Length: 560
Image 1 (spheres, rainbow, N blue to C red):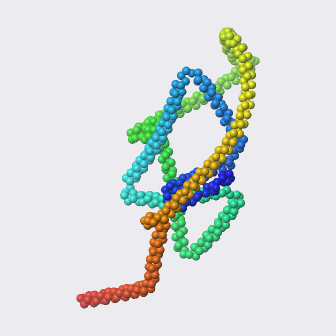
Image 2: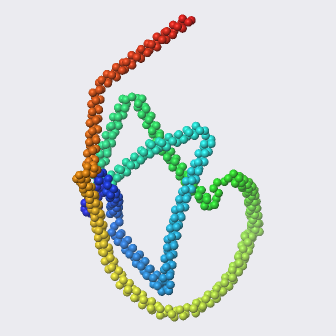
Image 3: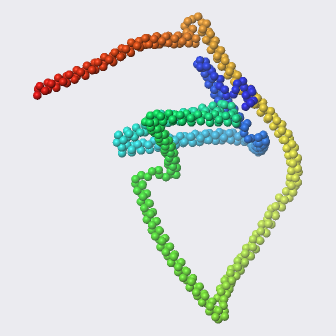
């Protein structure tokens, strides 16, 4: 950023203010708009450049990436050359290339069509979701209106109107003003130069001082408010509590609205998934009855199967108990036999006989397995010998052809190693030269970009100055013209007429003020006399009314 600041005639990011009378020209206004857009673009690019400069990428990482990209480029070049060499020998290469181009165009067209189709499907889905949401709202409103009278419906609409009016007129403007204030503060911070730790500490100290002053003012206000009227304080507290409740209810309403919108979206997605799987969206009356009957039948079947399972479990318990009893009886019989064998001097006879029977049975099985394995091994040996003889007969001519090829392969490997060494040395030298040239080209490009940006700025400044000069020349030409009608259209004449009108208006207002001041005292006296006369007439009217009431009372007495 220091290099840019050195080349730039003004500070970067500083807007050149243009007077309003010059901006009245359409061309100047258009140029100024373009200048503001370019200035914003310059700020964005400048920030991105500073961010890249302050990033953690080092020169070694960049060199490593460049080397990796060069290797990938070489691999791709070799692959392309191999593919070209393989394809050039084909007879109908031009036709195949034309077919490949047409195929690529069709594929691109198909991709565009698929993208458009996806976009249209998305738009249709959004429209369907909106339609479903509106239809559900309409159904809810109709259902609610059927069970509600006109007065309740009007009260509900009035409540909704008041809540919406509060959100639109009070809550949302406050939030918007807070957001705008935050954006302005952030913009100011971004436009300011970089701050050091000392500047931050100074700002923190100022913030603490301002906070202490604010606390003192708040305490003074509270002390004054304590001495004020208690009813007014109570009303203020009530108003603050009501305002807080309104804000809390508005936040809760907003959260409920967002949750309702999310639920509606999720419901629409679930409905779409049900449509894609072919499931029914909503069951009608007869279908729902069938579904209930099917559920009941399955419940009955489940109960029957469960009872059968309980019976089987009971039977399994009985059989297990029987098996335990038989096992116990077997053990008792076995102990009796062993005791009898001990008495007669042949202890272990039964166990030995059982073992001998098991050994004889297992020996017969092992002998059978051995005979089968020997037969399988002899067959496999014969098959392997025949296969080896066949492979030897088939490989004999190939081995004869392979012997001269091995010598040729060794020669080619030696030549490849020699050529690879030459290629690596040449590639290293060319790579170093290429890296130097790329650095030089990068420096020249940065210089050219800086000069180009400076050129554009100077051109815009020149255009602004030319527009100013043209406006001044036009004003001078109008002023020097002898035709009074033409001179009236000049800015000087227009401003003189406005000044004259304002002077005349000021004179008229001063004269009116003078007459009002002169007639103020007589008018006040006249008003006092008119009030006295009004009171006198009121007293006379009251006396006259009393006298008429007394006369009416006397007449009534005489009649009696």
